[in-house]
Length: 141
Figure 1 (cartoon, rainbow, N blue to C red):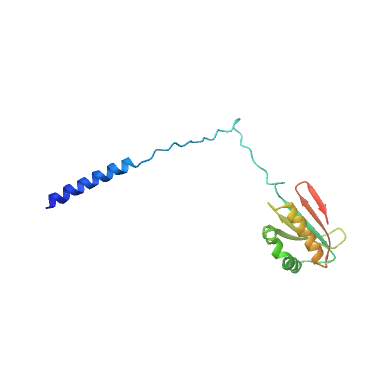
Figure 2 (figure 1 turned 45 degrees about the horizontal axis):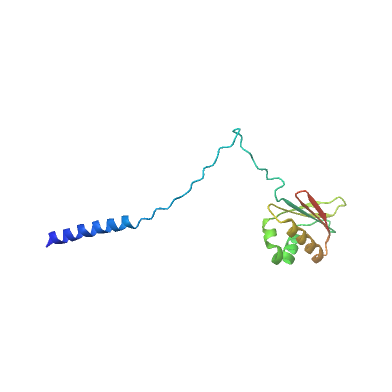
C-alpha cells in the first residue's frame, strides 16, 4: 500500500511540474542603461533660486514676536496651511524702526505667496505693506 502511495505522489509531482512548465509565459522586456556623464565631472544643482520665496511684512509695531506670527497663522491657516508649514519665520528691524515679519519658504508657489501676502495685509491691522520676492520676480503689495 505504501508503494502505491509513493507512486501516486511521484506521478502527482511530475504532473505538477509539467503543468507548471506548460503555463510559463514568455514576455520580452526592454532594459535601459544609464550612460555615463561625459567629461567625468558631475553637474550639481544649486538650491539657490529654485522655488525660494521671501515674504516681508512691514508693520507699525516697534517690536514683534511669536504673537504676531500666531495672529497671522490664525487668520490664514485654513487657506495657506501648506505654505505656512514650509515657511521659516524671522523678525527683523526695518529702515524706519518698525518691525519686519519675514517668511522664507523653499519650493513654494509664487502665486500662492502673493495671495498669502495680500490676505495678511487685508486681514491684519499691524501690516502696512508686503514685499514678495520669488526667484527673479519682486512684487510689492
